[in-house]
Amino acid sequence: MYYAEYFHLFERARSEYIRDCGMSYADVEKKGILLPVREAQCRYRSPARYDDLVLIRAGISEWRRASLRFVYEIWREDKNQLLCEGMTQHAFANPQGQPVAAPDWFREMAQNRRPGA
Image (cartoon, one colour):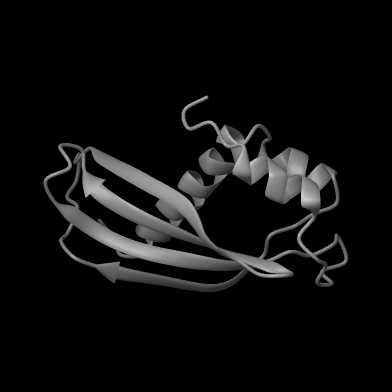
């Protein structure tokens, strides 16, 4: 798999994580909150190959006043081999792109996450 594709998988996993919290990312934006990426990292452990099935784990590892950090692991579907691990750091911003404090409703939503709901 092309190395940059892992970041697309991170984005999809992050969107599903937020959906499992009870709201789509589009709904988060409708409430006036954007989550621009400030930093992204990926550590490649083993290559994924064409037609491989993978399992992606995502979670929030850190909360700050106006930002949060998502962490990711991508495994072969059988969970026997870690393919990569990474993170993305996000600011909370208003529609004008200005930093804002993490809204209480977003924190509560993330704390009440129901995986696979």
